[in-house]
Length: 414
Ligand code: GLU
Image 1: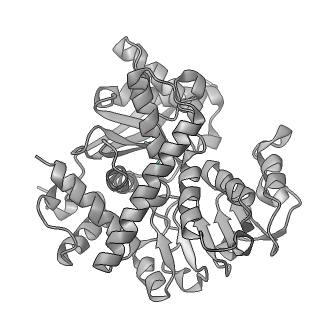
Image 2: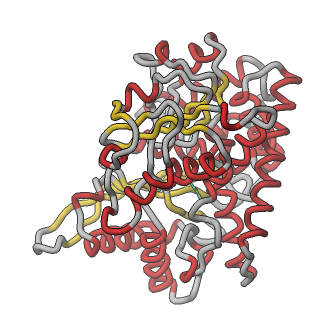
C-alpha cells in the first residue's frame, strides 16, 4: 500500500493549496478535491521511424479538475517532460481557466521527445499515436487539448483528423489551436502574446513607453510576437534570447529585423544571436538585466534559488508557465519585484481557445476584431478583479488570482 504522500504527483500543487488553507485565504470547503489530480493517463506506445526501426514514445494526459467544465490544456513535446510537470501544469490550467471565467476545468498533456530528433512524417505518427492512446478520454465535452511548448496548428490538425477517424464523425471542437483552414480561430496564433500585451498596456498606462525597457527570454511563438507588439507600441525592447543565447542593445533592438531573420525567408529557425543585431549575451545575463520588465516566455523554473538574488528587473510578467520556482518567489517579494502570475499573464491563449471551441460548436466564424476585443475585455476584467482582491486582502497578485479561481471552483462543486 502507498501512503497518501507517496501518491502525490505534484508536490507544488499541494504546497500551494496548503498555503492558501493555512493562511485562511480561501475557505477550506472542498479544497481537498484540488489536492489531487482527477485522472492521470500514462502510455508508452510504439511508432515506426522512417528507417523502419521502432521507437517507444512516452506520453501523458492529466485531467486535474473538471468542476467547471471539460478539461482544457495544451500538449507539449519536450524531452524532459514528466508526469510531475504535466500534473503541475494541469493544476495551473485549472486555476487559469477559472480565474478568467471560462467554462472549463484544467488539463495538460506531454510527449517525452525532442521534436528535433524526428522528421515531419514521424511527428505525424507520434501525434496520431497520442490520440489513438487517449481518444476515449478526450472530446469536446470531456477534455479539449491545444498547443503548448513545441506543438503547433499542424500537430493539432493531425490530432483532430485522427480523432475523427476513430469516432467516425466531424468533431472540430475536440481540439483548439488548429490552423484557420482547419477550423481554428482567427487570432489564436498570437493570442497568448496579445493577452500579455493588453495587461502590460494597463500596467504601464501612465508611463512614456519609450522609457520602459523590456528583456524577453524566449523567442518562440509567445516571446517573438510579444516582442513585436511591444516594439510597435513604442516600448524599448533591449534584449531577447532563445536557446542559443541572447542579444542586447541599450537603446532598444530592431525587433522587425530579428523577426525576419529568425522567421522570414530561407533563414527559418535562425537563432537571434545570428541576426547581426545587438551585442551577444548569455541567457543568464538577460535574466539579470536591470530593466523595467523581465518577460520569461520559454520554459518553467528559469528563476530559481540560484539566480533569484541577481534579478534586477522592477517587474516580471510570467508569459511561460511556472518560470518562477516557489522558493524564489518569496525573495522576489522581499526585493519588491512585482510579479504578474502565469495564470493571468498567459491566459490569452486559452481564452481564444475557448472562442475557437465555441465557434466550432455553434458553427460561427468571428472576425479578428471580435476575437481581440472579446479577449481584451475578458483578460482586463480578470486583471482588475485580481488587483482589487490583492489590495483588499493585502495579497500578492498570484495569491489573489488563486483566491478568485479557487472560490469559483468551490462554488461549482456539487
Ligand atoms: N498551452 C496554453 C496554456 O498553457 C494554451 C492552452 C489551451 O489553449 O487550452 O495556457
